[in-house]
Image (cartoon, rainbow, N blue to C red):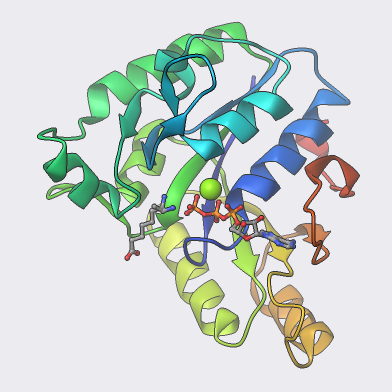
Length: 224
Ligand SMILES: Nc1ncnc2c1ncn2[C@@H]1O[C@H](COP(=O)(O)OP(=O)(O)OP(=O)(O)O)[C@@H](O)[C@H]1O
Ligand SMILES: C[C@H](N)[C@H](N)CCCCCC(=O)O
Ligand SMILES: [Mg+2]
């Protein structure tokens, strides 16, 4: 079973697009691939009388394995704010155990699982729990999505350092060109390639209509 945890330099940097691109790439090598959004804040009508998070809907569309929503999105909070605030407003506390159980059930059915975090590495899920704690509890190699814009070098280096300090391997990183006006994108990319100490798995071009299927992804050999 192949699995990874996708984090980012921030919220809104392209983690969902990157996770979908990873799922499509994995599906070229493996039959049963599935995305997981363990904690989602923000819900919209799912078109079937219920509610769903837009990241979950995108991950499901990129997955080949269909699972019940309690497995691929065990915690769905209505408000699109930091998960610890969304949970408080919903009168809930995010707990690790049910998320780990859901992941184990997914992993038992799948050849590959891509787990998308929420926001960046230190985002709180509850007063006592952060995204980093969840990734550590899952013991997954991490893929870091860097939203290429001014300031991303600092955010990327700090995040990579924190991931390694947590004891998890940084399996690779993805450049996500979220700012078409960015100056010197290639020089920024070159610096990150030299200093992140992990392979660049994909370079997502800026797209007016982002299409995860159209992006070339270089999967680590062990994932092929
Ligand atoms: N390469 C790109 N080109 C153009 N737009 C992009 C690109 N990558 C991401 N976007 C857009 O930026 C926005 C944020 O991207 P996305 O939802 O993937 O972020 P995220 O990191 O998953 O955020 P969250 O923390 O909410 O999960 C979306 O509207 C997405 O379509
Ligand atoms: C609602 C949003 N789309 C994300 N899922 C949550 C982002 C939390 C960011 C918290 C923070 O770092 O300040
Ligand atoms: Mg997302």
